[in-house]
Image 1 (cartoon, rainbow, N blue to C red):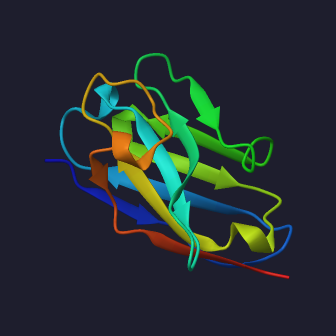
Image 2: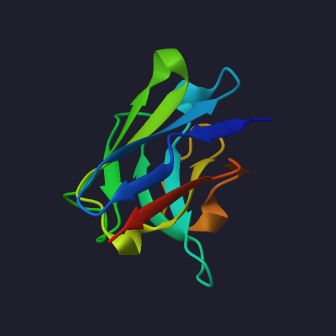
Length: 125
């Protein structure tokens, strides 16, 4: 069982930056593809970014490309999401997610097996 704990959310003005962190339990983190999703009120949970376990390759939603950066530190069992140039439409609860070991990244919520509790990001205009 993998437990994920997000942190780093908060209130920021448009154009500002935030760095989300997700700490994972367990000994398989270095073999686990990780993703970030978000869910705004009244909307479905949507993919934001993901990072592979094997080569560190990354993939982004169109809305995140060029503004967000996902990274990981296997020594700390932690994945990060650096968010720059934030917009009011980025306001959502952000969730960290993990696949089972040795699976490549996915973009669907159904491909991820473990989820954190979420952290609120609010961007004011």
